[in-house]
Image 1: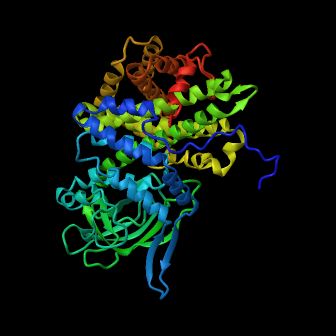
Image 2: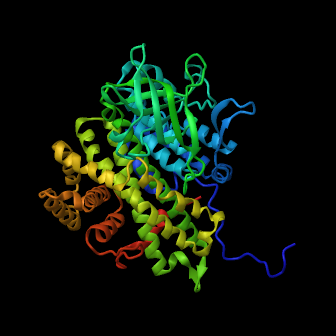
Image 3: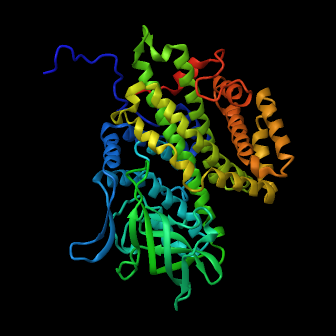
Length: 544
């Protein structure tokens, strides 16, 4: 029995048993905006179901358990046979099964598939981000495989299946398959042209034996991997199955699993190839061009994942402050805390709005939209993923000491928050990629300016920011040293234009004031006090 002094008061109830999708007004509005009426009702019903599942106490507990029980490598069985298997907690498999069945690997073949999947990815990330890695790799492998129609015809139905079929067996015997990726090596990192893994042609046309290593290999229990290796004709993309068609294990030697800051539930491995069988994807010497579609898709998933983490952090902060009292009133009603929460909510909504706009561009697939993606994806990857960590840390601070305790869930978000900025090319890689697009693909900048121009005249601060951006773009001499500044402005102007066009006036006004008009500080909670901050906070509050 608790002592008479142990009476619990002034604590917020757990944020569970709510619709994660329906409680996110910015996400709901983006889905409605970008989907055709013919599929909107069906999509919203699916997302509502996933949102309720995601907010349930049981599924939230699965996320906690998957994170608390990280994967374990077993290189050999009890008899000394090399098996190279990774064991996961049952909660991992439950989460991955839910993600697959929710369509997180099946965007490419259905109407509005990318917008629907993007919204689901934002929702599902809020449960547990680690399992989203194999879901992302599997989804993103499709465009690379489509460079070889015969290969795509065999593998695409497996990848887009909504059945999670675990275990290492020949992929042709399974109801669904997952993909991983291995690009980087110790000596090169993002400079994949420095790769040393060698590919020796075999007798059968299009097949090779690989010898070398991969320093980061995602999701090592996947059914197959796309990897880069040096063939006689240069750097080439290959498909490496874990199990060959005759049922024998391909040579895939897992040396160790990475001990990561966050993303604890997910296995990231160092692997060795020693005569490993592989099938060429695309032409020899065209490896980067072949795999670039996969890279672009995973970069968009980094944006979506960060948007999901940001949204969950904001939801937790606003929820806590709506219940917690200090100095005679609710924290949410205190002017200073309201400014912090409004600023966090503004950043989260801008990230979500931009991410869903890019997903819609994938669904459209017209020349104009493809050109927009060429600049907008790396710019969004650069900016949104970098804003994630400071936002999550500030949101945790809103909970005070409670936010520094594991049971609050905030430390897991904090550990996860830098990941998307590092993976799939860190900030400098994204900035340099934008510069390449500006120099080599003038149509990309035209598409970007056309998109931003749709908001011309709606807000003088946005118009001024566009004018300043054009001035910077007019002089690209020696631009590399200021590339981060330029890419930041590209992302902010694009976010501002989208919010001016689509968000409520109080949201657009706050963004233009605080992000484009110079009337905001370097930390969250420095928006002009004259703005309608209460409406921003109320819009971000998760309802149950």
